[in-house]
Image (cartoon, rainbow, N blue to C red; front, side, top):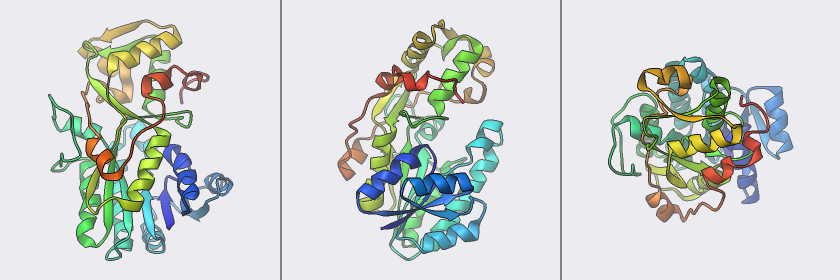
Length: 305
């Protein structure tokens, strides 16, 4: 397939390009700068110059492809607090690319997050691929992706773990937590730290995107989850040990001051299953788990971005 990939020069994109190329696909990556275009060319992909706000360009690129993987998101806006604008722009981009594929039967693989399940109030059990949320920030985009199945697109939505980890990760939540610990002098957790976060290695996630592109049924929801639920206190303890910092529970009234832009997330219990995904696509994670990966130097060799 000739596959159009947004976010191709980013964290997961940098693993997805070789995964696709090694399995006989061609890659056309969205590049918003000369630097991104050069990165894509060096990786063996073709660059399509544009950006997420160029809706006509996105529609045309999707229509000219054999399938789309949508990884891009305006993370800078999210970190600066303009989260709702980033979400709205993501939805517009999905609608534009979906229109380009409408009626073709071609695949569209979109990206969501398992944290939305925690925000919805799922407690006492693992969130599953069968959990369908009614709507709200980011959920509307998820439902738009799966809804493309009713418009002749073989669409699937891949809910990623909040912690996608590897040496390819330079700006994700793991680096955020490490940077916060460095800045505050404390590696913290909320309450007793028993709330759980799922995780997946970047290379395992890239393989799952490729499998979804090739064979996921129309309208399916998939979970990019290897570790189904790592206690947050365990994560804090590894970070504290590596940075030689105290590990402590953060009082509820101090969470915002301690965790900055992650304050709304760190207390969530996001126990999540990927059993249906593994069965459906024959996907089995093979790379290091989160706590093992966090013990390696690549997360601590330089200050977190």
